Length: 206
Image (cartoon, rainbow, N blue to C red; front, top):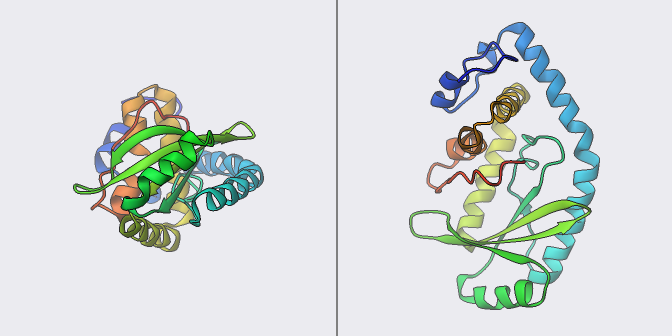
C-alpha cells in the first residue's frame, strides 16, 4: 500500500495493527504532530455538541452515556461524528425502541454483535450537523467498555495517539475504505480483544 505523502510502509503498519511512533522518521513524525494539532482545533465545538447529546440521551433513557468513539479517545479526524454508549437492560429494549424510534427522537441503524453472545442496538440522531450514534450495550458489556476506555486513557501515550491518527489520515487518503475502517478499530481490539470489533466501511468519516 503506497501513498506519495508518506515514507511509512502502511501495509506493514496495518498488518502489525499498531503504529509505533519510535519507528517514524523524524520528519514524518513532525508532520504527524502538526496534523494532530490541527485536529484538536475542533475539540471545543465537539465537546459542546457531545454535552448536548449526552443530556438528551440521559433524559430519554435514564442512563448516563459515555463517549465510546474516536473523539473520546482523541483519535478523531476533522469534524468527526460522535459515538456514545449506554448500558441498558436487554429485557427493556422494546421500550427503548418505542421511546427513541416511535417517539421520533432517533433512527434505528440495527442490532450488531458486541461479543460472540451479546448484541447492541445502534441508533442515530443529529445535533448542529454532527451525527450522533448511540449504542445501547448490555449493562455488563458497557462496564467492560468503560474499563477498556479507562485503560486507553491511562496507557496510550500522546505520541501513540499522534502516530495512530496520522496513519488513519493516510489510509483515508489512499481511498482504501476497508483498510481505513479496520484501522479505526485497532485500538479497541488491542485493549479489549473479547469484543467483536467489526469494521463498517460505509461509516468512514470519523
